[in-house]
Length: 115
Image (cartoon, rainbow, N blue to C red):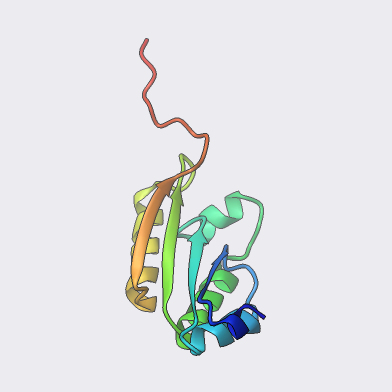
């Protein structure tokens, strides 16, 4: 419906679901997709209680085949290992997003406590 008014749309997703309508909008050059990735490795996704790593990676690749995407890494204490960062960098190299963003987890303090 929004496309009928000449608007460009911005979508945000975790990549868990692939939505054909979003992909079609990307293919028409009428939208941008930001995918927030929770981890750079399968092991870290599993530690969050879900085995969706392959699914998320596959969906990111499918969206990228339809148009431009942005990748966002939400860094927190449980996903900031070298393996996770390397995994995310490799995902970015493979999918070639137009941009990459790294942000801290909302509400998580990165300040070191003083004793």
